[in-house]
Amino acid sequence: MGKPIFHEKWWLDAVAPGSWREVVCIRGGQVVGSLPFEELSQGGLKSCAMPQATRILGPILEIRPGKAESLARSTQSITASLLEQIGKHDHVEMVLGMEHADVTPFLHAGFEVKVQPTLLLNCKPPLPELWAGLRDKTRNAIRRAREQLTVQCIEDVRQFTRFYEENLEDDTPYFSLAASAAATAAACDHKQGKIVAAMGADGVAHAMVVFLWDEYQVYYFHSSRKKNLAHAGAVSLLLWTGIELAHSRGLWFDFDAGLAKVSRYKFLVSFGGEIANRYEVTRSTRIYRVQHGIRRIRRAVAHRLPILSSLKRNYFLLW
Image (cartoon, rainbow, N blue to C red):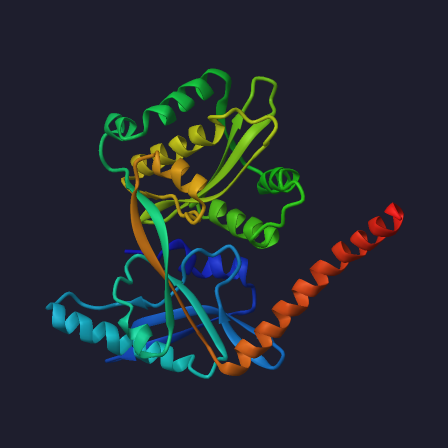
């Protein structure tokens, strides 16, 4: 079996050129574990970070099948060896893939563990069964969208990036658009990525979505829509297109989106997926936490200064 897409060297070269590293564990002359990460330096402190636009990245273990007890011991031993090799870094953060159900090696190494839920849908059953699994309102939204929109592939990654930027509406993206574009382009070049758009009859895009895939699942990577124009079912139509893609490949579909917002959770759960938990693991030295706290305060102050200046001007204008 191959690696998850986010562990591929070409992916890491795209999102963290020149700054990603890898440590390995060797037993009996063979590599039995590896751990890639992006190495960053700031204020004299070194971090093992999650690269931009990368959803999961953690240890990859090559363990032979065996008894539960021997598997647990091997997992603990190999993971501990990998973590020991990055033990001198001041900050380490990872989001583990679903295969890491046992996080005890990280707890033993002093990491904090947080849950990051996602939604997974098994797309191997027949399409009519998957269609029936959608909520009634979701099926109706897709039907109505099909009456006015067509799904088209977008070959130029820059077209998606421009579309995304146009629809930000003064919001700040939570990821680097440059890294996302580089990663999407690399995935498309390796036949593991696809951009689809819901287009109106006038040739105007209502919504666009980027899908990625590996040997395990199709990922709902990025999406954007024209808020004042988009058909209410535009994104739902594109998500169903992603489910069809996963079905054609005999894979699972990973909605892979932040579920902390109730509205987003309600929207995505209507496609019939089941909750699955990933784990975010972090470890920081005291000096890193202090520096990070100071930087956070400075950013907050810098953000508030223009607002305070505006309030002062308005105050004096009133008087």
